[in-house]
Length: 98
Length: 323
Image (cartoon, rainbow over all chains, first blue to last red; front, top):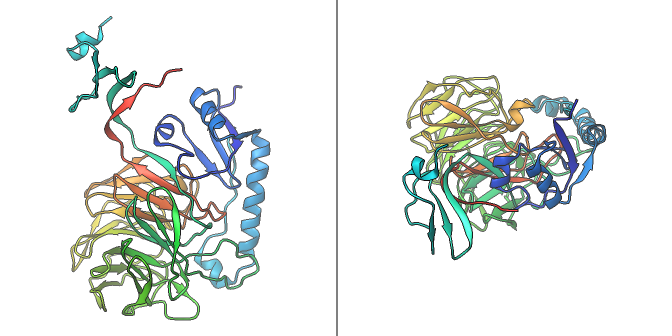
């Protein structure tokens, strides 16, 4: 089955990283660890990855990067006092799509 | 097959400059810039803006998309701090980058903000030590202490200006509303539904409360009482909002994944879903207007420094890109 999404790692440098014109053409999803999901087999998405010097990752590689960030956030939450825990829910796992 | 002229009524013109009043669907060739252009109704979209100097969540903000101020928050690293340290950092945005300004007098998180970049109001929040009702006024350079809220609280929402502010809701599931006149707070009409971690925007006499925990309807304030309005399509809390009572924007929030990215606009009677945030998050802050909103900070769950700028789209000239 042809994959629907592709993943890359790229550092968000701020202004110009994602332009409005790109956001209108591409469905972006940013995840912890500078992981980005964009459509696969998509010329506009490929051009954007090239622009931001994105390093392509398989879905499993991207998932591992995200998991590491989430695990760290969960560990930090677990170390909080009960009062602090009551103020914010425990960070949820993030499952990347194919 | 129909031709462009048959559909539009004119041929594609070669012009030395863009037409002053193009109509939707018009295509022309600009022979000065050698570009093909058209006038189209663009969809809404978020783009990235300049990054905050440091990743922060549970942050507050005020101002516009090109002149915003961010203050307070949870620090970038908090493992081992129990309770965590709150911070008083203040940063200003000019539409492309953030620069540091003078700190708040009282470090805090889960606070509320209102006003403009040169006349902002920061109030409430989790402070340690100090009063959760502490209020501070920013003049574009430094903070001075203002009047203390009658009901100090955390995870509240704010609206209005530095001299006509509005604070409502907050921990622990309160419905208390207070109005600020530039020096002191007085009681206003209670929210219909008590809630925490709600979002707000508007003015002291035309405020808007939406989202929150527990999930509750939107409420509109007229300066003395709240009336119920439709609930967000994606119920959530710990999100952000901006705009007015009749042109509001809600974005981000908990729970993921839908709450993290959802953006909705309010027209005074109903909420409509619009373009998602590119970087989903909660505990972020907002500023600006419905057509030109600003989102900054938050947690993904990692704390982020990311800023995003909302464009409502609309009619605009577009240059055709060629390979």
